[in-house]
Amino acid sequence: MYKIGLLGYGKMGGAIIGGLIESKKYKKSDVLIYSLNKDDITRDGFTAAEDEAYVYENVETLILAIKPQQFEEVMAKLKDCKNKPELIITIAAGITISYIEKSLGSDLKVVRVMPNLGAAIKMAVTTMAHNKNVDDRSLASAKAIFESIGSVTLVDEDKINTLLPLNGSYPAYIWYFIRSFVRYAEKNGVDPMDARKMLADATIGCAKMLNESPKDLDTLINDVCSYKGTTIEGVYVFDDMKLDEIVDKASAACAKRGDELAK
Image (cartoon, rainbow, N blue to C red; front, side, top):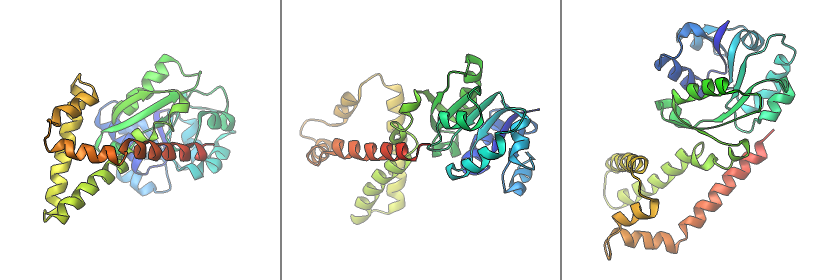
């Protein structure tokens, strides 16, 4: 019996398993993986399974890292398996806990997570929800898996899509914002790579201060905006252009699409 099973060995699945091995919580021999790219699995030193059902019946914890459109086919292959994992974790967008229960059994312990691209550098921001069958031990196990690649926030399942703009989609949005500043710099004769480096370092500094400071966001903003200074002029423009409303609309659109994709 393997401790961890993985269906799907793409970027996110690979990042999760890589984080677990790097954290020394598990050994490569503890992991069983099924994916079409078997050569990648064996090249990385893991055991490759012949099919999805073999993984399902021979692991303690199963992580479903397949694409949402693959679930119907895969669930059909698993529903009649005799042995079941102690814990099932799904990371696919739109795949709800109730969908897993209906497909594989309402008695299962199911955890649904939404990590983000930060998993690639062990800085994922993950939201996590679970069904009523999940006990403290299983929840601690699930949290430990995703804490090996970043931070975890426990939420009710109906908040996973609400929070998509803050974790799953946030990298695209912050890079979009940064790109606008890079374009401003380039337009004014600054090397875009120099601008990127400045903005990356400034963003890391802001994030570190935000995590460590007891001050609220308004105070942090005001600390930079001296009276009749330079920064406040830009803030006035953001206010005039109603940046808060733009972010609110963009976030609502993102969350709505998450709801539309739900099964």
